[in-house]
Amino acid sequence: MPTGCFEQSSSATYPNILTALYLRETKRMTPEIGLKLDAALAAGYQKLLTFEDEARGGFSLYPDQATSPYLTAYGILILGDLAKVYPVDPALLPRSIRALMASRRADGDWVDERGGPASTAYIGLGPRGGGTAGPRDRTGSRSASAR
Image (cartoon, rainbow, N blue to C red; front, side):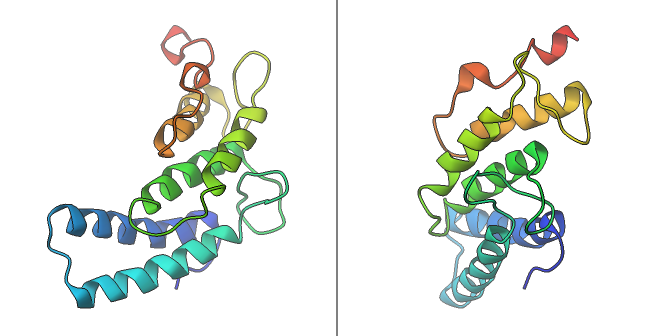
């Protein structure tokens, strides 16, 4: 069972997602491993949902804290992969992408505690990795290479 903050919980969950993706793709999934992975994925998914601000969208480091564009982008990437191997609420990724895009400044950058062009470049990957046809033409401010 994943514990701790969003980053700790996702670090415990993501390897199970990647394992399930690999085993299914290579047709090496056994019923026994499938049951264990499904239980681990269910626990991880439920834990990750505790970090979502469902009213506004986005994810925070701890429940009931302000959301972070950085963590929201990471959540979109993780949940996009999870949706390939486990049932995910179909409204979750679009809601998270809308929240992420709404948090952009007028110049196209995102303000985040980590700051700088690397954050904007990383955060901009979220909508692309979330398994949706998100706003691809708006995922980067003045290109990161232009800085």
